[in-house]
Length: 150
Image 1 (cartoon, rainbow, N blue to C red):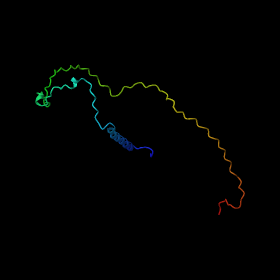
Image 2 (tube, rainbow, N blue to C red):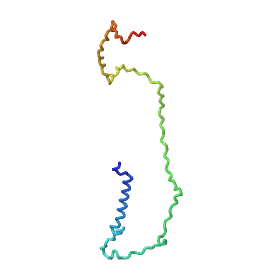
Image 3 (tube, helix red, strand yellow):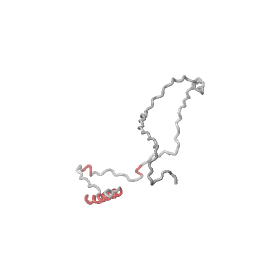
């Protein structure tokens, strides 16, 4: 990964670019963060007329209505109580027997055929019949004794 930037390096580069852009912006904008006031071409009687004086004292505020006490319990409204509906008794049914009643056995259904049918066994290759054992003794070579006697 030497050709790629890690997440940390990318975040550092973005933060530096943001800091440089925010430092250059006041220099290019004339070192003024607030916008310049717009030129007003309206009639003079609207903008130059003094308004009514504002009373800046607590006495001018007047009376404030008292707040209700939130801790005080509000009186509850009584509701009309309706009579309970009448209950109509239902007849008592006998309990179901514990053992089920025997039913007729269904006829025998043959089992379903198997879904997988194994392949037929392949025929075994014919093996040649073993040749009969030799009846004569081989000629003696003279160097090797096969009789097993010492």
